[in-house]
Length: 269
Ligand SMILES: [Zn+2]
Image 1 (cartoon, rainbow, N blue to C red):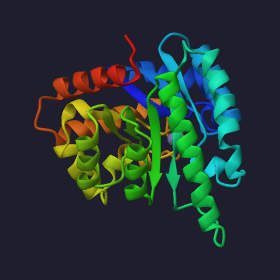
Image 2 (cartoon, helix red, strand yellow):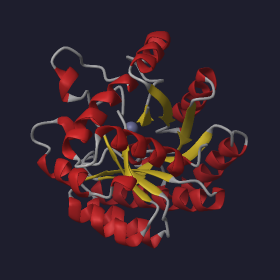
Image 3 (cartoon, rainbow, N blue to C red):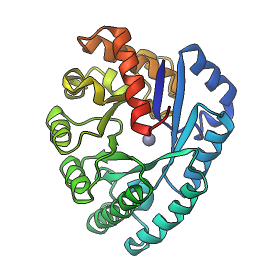
Image 4 (spheres, rainbow, N blue to C red):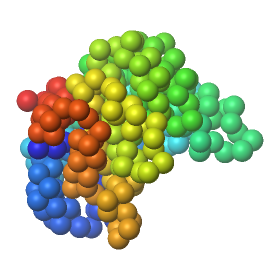
């Protein structure tokens, strides 16, 4: 059984074909998913989807760095308060805060300094929220590895997943030393030929800290890439199969361990 720990099933490409998406998940034995929010509206859509899909689907609520970088930095606390009330009324479905983080790849030329500062403000406000609510955070980090790891420590965040892991083993080891509740989630990137450093990390990290995800509708795994442009939760099977080829443990054991990790991380029974 596989848990797609990070997808956006409410986005275009997936939202109009929900029955098919769910059927494909069943066929691939992808039993559970977390629908991840990226801004206020889409967090609400993630929540609606988690309700529609019933008892094997949950959601996360949060503001992605590129969703907040052009907002006033001093509005971060107000936004965190709004998110808090949304989570508060939906504790059965909202299992994480995210995705939050730092994205220094999508900065607007000329606005880099202010956007970086704003991203940090929103990161800290939402990190504090996760501690208040006792929820884990889903971290997006792009071109900002050192800053992300410093900020996690500054904010005192121990329960976190580095989603769509695309850094190297050194970055992961630094975080492993910081927390025994930090996880690393591998996406279709793991299956790409040039992802040597990512594969090296997946090979060497403790198995009990590994999760898998699709980030659907983005990042179609290599095995489906020739014919398909829209990723979907069922394709997390390809990520899992690839992970098994990298690990020394038996395949069944890898699949079971990653399933258990996912449920432990989100505290699901
Ligand atoms: Zn995502």
